[in-house]
Amino acid sequence: MSLLALEREVAALIVQTLKLKTDWSTIHPEAALFGDGLGLDSIDALELSLAIAQTYGYQVKSSDPEIKETFSSLRSLARAIEKNRTK
Image (cartoon, rainbow, N blue to C red; front, side):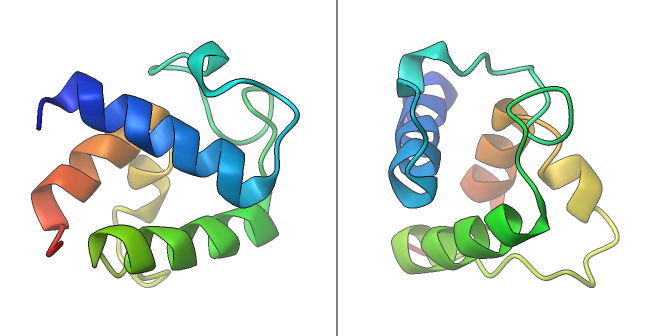
């Protein structure tokens, strides 16, 4: 699967999991997921981590030193999933 296709899939997963009132296609790959970007919070990160584990087999751990980078944007999240997925 290409990174672009995975980004689309992950964007759709974010919208579906968090029940966002936006279309997945409006999530810019480089925009921040938290704060001024998409506006996600720590509860959203937890829910999203569970969905990622179920869908891709990638256990995102809060103790990971790269966690902030992983969740910094859709593109960085897709790259981390691509690198660490087991499904």
